[in-house]
Length: 209
Length: 139
Picture 1 (spheres, chains in turn cyan, red):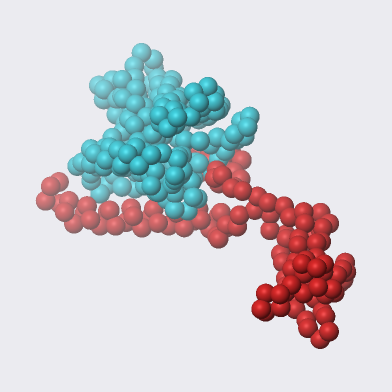
Picture 2 (spheres, rainbow over the protein chains, first blue to last red; picture 1 turned 90 degrees about the vertical axis):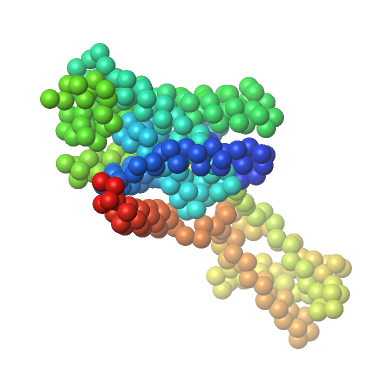
């Protein structure tokens, strides 16, 4: 559901999507170093495959998005990872259209930024627990934001409000729950075994040594 | 450590049940096949014997009506059907595959996943080459 297909949105919205995505890609990739590529590629691969993991929910079917995980592991670079993985999904899975690539990247990439910012401001608890709680929270909010973005865009094309809000937002509640748990667990695990895989929170940096 | 992390992500993904890609497709089911017998100038061929064959065996026989049409209702699990028409020395064969139930994927899903990951690896490699060429001065 979070992938909008070709021929659904009006031309102006598609163009705006590409414009915004171009701007955010430049922001996302500024100052990129060669050493960061393997990590970005690994997360991108996970994003690419994540959409194959799907569950039937009522009359529709939803799948993992993992944009929250991308946000807390890649930070600013997450948008580029989302862009590449969505391009590959559009080509190989006919999953979301190529003309809607800009809009789809926006829908999934911007919430990854939200997740990053939430995770950056983590604090309050002890180390592995803090990462798990904030990682889960970030992932849940990321999926919810994606669902809301898609709903708003479909509303703008004139779909009935009730139908869309139920289909898109309600259908994503299980995804929100699953991603909160998965991302929380991954964040807690990484905080213990290799914290350098997560974006360095301000608190984290202070407590590092 | 990086290996451990990659492994974790792979395991997490495999732990969830994967099936086909999350893409809307259309399926179909053929309940009735109407074959039309006609001569090459477009004239319908009446009273032509039609023999319906499946796996080399004849499963139905019929005759075309005044419009050259013959209607056949296949059983539920029909695979390939072959219609053989014969009328006074004329013979034509038409083969239909009814076992196809939905839009065909050109490439199997695992192959598409592998292809996608391959492209990703390629993009990552090119990006690394590009960055490491211009990198040293900056770093």
